[in-house]
Image 1 (cartoon, helix red, strand yellow):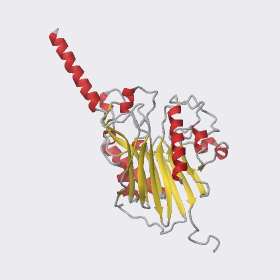
Image 2: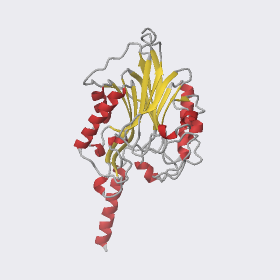
Image 3: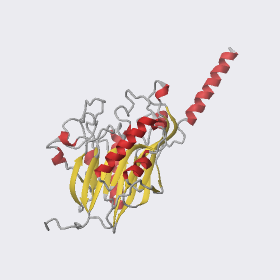
Image 4: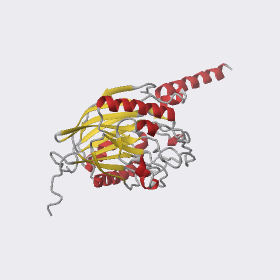
Amino acid sequence: MKMFLGVALVLLAVFLTFFAWAPYPWSLGTSQGKFPVIDVEPEEMIDVPENPSVLKIVTFNLGFLYGEGSEGVNYETRSKEFFLKTLEDASSEIKSWGADVICLQEIDFDSARSQFINQAEYIAKKAGYPYVAEAVSWNANYIPFPYWPIKNNFGRMHSGGAILSKYPLTDHEVILLGKPESQPWWYNLFYLHRYFQKVTINAGEKKFKLINLHLEAFDKLNREGQIKELSEKIKSEAIDFVAGDFNMLPASASKRSKFYNDDNYENDRSYELMMKSGLAEVIPDEIYAKDEAFYFTFPAWAPDRRLDYIFYKPGLKMMRAEVLPSALSDHLPLRASFQIGSPSFNLYSQ
């Protein structure tokens, strides 16, 4: 009996030690701070105009470049060779988009699941982006997910969002948002933070304030609260652009429930609240309603909804917005072009 009790106490101590160690460093609340911008030396520098007339922005949830299954369904660990190959493909594809600023979500900096490669700096170096801002929103010694078998657990996690830019970035700020109160406290210890990541883009003589974000996916009330907080920040700090994975549907979306992964957007006020922020949307709802499928961004292999958006300050001239084809992630990228100055050449001279 004493031996049994002793073994039980030892096992309990091991479990409690693991439970305390695994999610560290964790935070159940909110936090924010200023962070430096990383200078990267690209393999091939891309010339940028001194005073550009056009600014192209892309938002893309990378899903840590795993592809289908990144959310945990049928997930299996993959080799370093796999991730090096997908990073090469991603770098080439991103370079071909010709964007000036790339807003990335679900990108790994030093995680076991992606073989401890800093994906942001790798892509920046290969694709020609000398300025990188990293926002760590998920930082734990061990994530026990997917739950079984143990060999497929995510393990060490160091992940979040990143902004890659051809123009200098300053005033880098990261705000980690509160986790859903509907989830058990022990679950929230291991759960990722959603976040706002703010920078100033110094495009020649012009400066633009941009927020890259990833909002709550599984709790509508939590997401609505995040958008209210975002709206206040947009107004108080005169934000010019907001881009990212909002995990919400447009107002006119014809399907709002019974998706393949059981996501339900019924009675979700997220889009409505975002439209009160004072920013305009690059694909207005009345345009979206005319051909929904043309603007779907998720899931990439069989798109059935739009989750990714770029908003901009009225007064800026939006030239074009488009969903780009890609097989790199479970999301599709969205690109928008804005006229920020006089054209560098006369369109009518020929």
